[in-house]
Length: 180
Image (tube, rainbow, N blue to C red; front, side):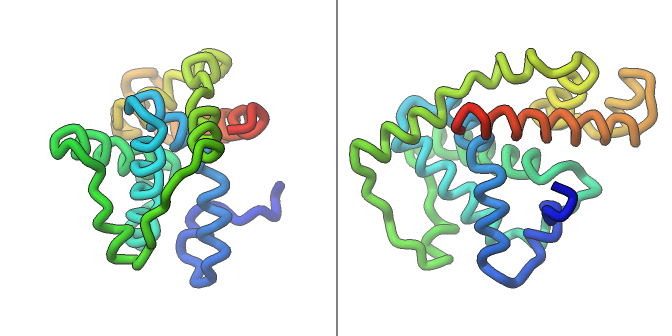
């Protein structure tokens, strides 16, 4: 696993396969996150597709010093969900700008999206050690800055960063094992 490139390298690589690896690494977590917040698999698909299209467009804006890539992706997804609720549709602007053709989903694809979205994130988070769970929840979901988390839990910012990174890595492994 040590030879696996980190997210920042995958995002800055010019070769399209690098972004494909980044996508495969995080699509399960993003899909599970989105599916818990939207009502239908087709909406889940649209939000996830637009999330990764925007990530591809804006990959130069990712700053690993601000947090892990999955947190960046979930932030994009969260904003798209809020925007979709307000507009009553998922904006596909990034997909259009990238020249991506609309995708018509069949029943099998819809079932696969539902299965990916049915991962129990609550249970996966509960399985984390408490310090990691708190760090992940504060950083990724509440978007608290690292210094604020460090002050609240009484440790260094570097320790908080390690807890978030380790917690997210463990969640990613568990989601992958569950078939997400």
